[in-house]
Every structure is written in structure tokens, then in C-alpha cells.
Amino acid sequence: MIVSAHQPAYLPWLGYFHKISLCDTFVYYEHVSHSKRDFTTRNKIKTSQGPMWLTVPVLKGEEDQISKLKINPQIPWQRQHLKSLETCYGKTPYFSKYMDQIRPFYESYDGEFSDLVFEMTKTFLEILGLNVKLIRSTDLPIDQPKNEGIFQMMEALEANKIVFGAHGRDYVLLEEYRAKNLKFYFQDYQHPVYPQAYGEFLPYMSILDLIFNCGPNSLSILTSGNILKQNIPFE
Image (cartoon, rainbow, N blue to C red):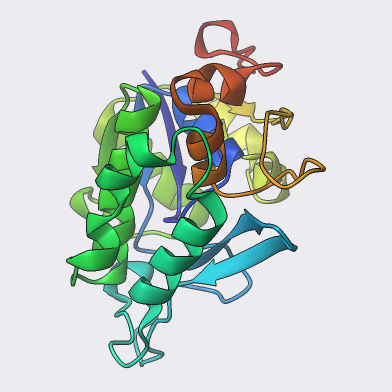
């Protein structure tokens, strides 16, 4: 079985979902620490003036584990984000087709951050038509950091193959994986160009940019020019 894992990301970019498409089970790795430098709580959408960040405000406390992040209730971020999406994408071809599935997260959702992003991720997978099992890392017996934690994850899932992101080469101890007879692959995502509002194409936008502009063709565009699961050259 092929597994992959990634920490939660709000409105992820296309490469996040390509990585998910390469596995049988995707682990929503939420029990790691949050860093403001990451894309955990933020991502970009395209406006008529260029890219704009949408950020979910979270409270900074003694516990910064992603699974325990709490959204700041004093900031009206939901209303702000919803207005931005309506303004930037209201006239795109598929906004009305998919916005009803997205809108409840901005009008009635009051859970914690990790729960919000988990549910949003499931919705995006449904829209894309990606049938991949999604598991939360907090539901697995993982109590070690980095490589040891990954070994625990793979053992719990009885998996023998894993897909890493491109930056995995910075921390993955390849010889340990080979010693355990575990196969691995490092994703090398090639960003596609697709029809997009507001002139010149901008890459690395949120998955919503692709969905609202391209609708049912989103998954085929997302994977175009990239390796598919059945062709992964595991090492």
C-alpha cells in the first residue's frame, strides 16, 4: 500500500492534491508544531491586482501543536474571506456550481482550526473526484518525531511504500528506509497552466482558483504533465 502524509494546509495549492493522488491512504499529519513560516494557516488567491493572502487567525498559546490550534474568535476572518472569494471569483465559470459546498465553512462553522481544514480537505477531494482514504495522524499510535514517527505511521497502516514531498530529501534517512525494505518516492510537481481570470497566469494559487475556473476538468489539469500513481518509480 502507498501512503503519503502532510501537515494541514488552509486552501492548499495544486501540488498538495497531486501528492494525495499518488497514494492509497493520505495521513493528515496534525500533531506536529505550527510555524508561521509554513502554509498551515494561509494561502493565496488571485485578485484583479495580483495574488492576495487569506489567513486564518489563530491564538498563540502554550500549546502550538496544529491539532490543538484555536481560531481567534475576535477577528471576523470568515466574513472577510467569504467576501474576498465572492469578489475575486464570483464571475468565474464554476463559482456558482461549487460555492454552495464551500460557503458553510464561512457562514456556520465554529470548530477548531485543524477540524476546519480537515473537513475542507475532504470537500476538496470530493469536488476533485479523488477517492483516497484520509486518516488523521492523531488517530494513529505515533509518538516519535520525524523519521521514527513516519516508521510508526507506516507500520500502523501496514504500508510499504511512501510518497514524500520534494523537500523530503532534506530530512529522510534513505538508508534506514532501505534497511526496513520500505520503498520511497520524492514528488516533483510540475505546475500546469490553465484558464484563469485577470490576465497573465499566476501559479501557486489555492486549489479554489483551479476549481472555480476549470470545474470538472480540475483533476485532469492538476495531474497533467505529472506522474500518475500507477507509474511511480519507487526507489
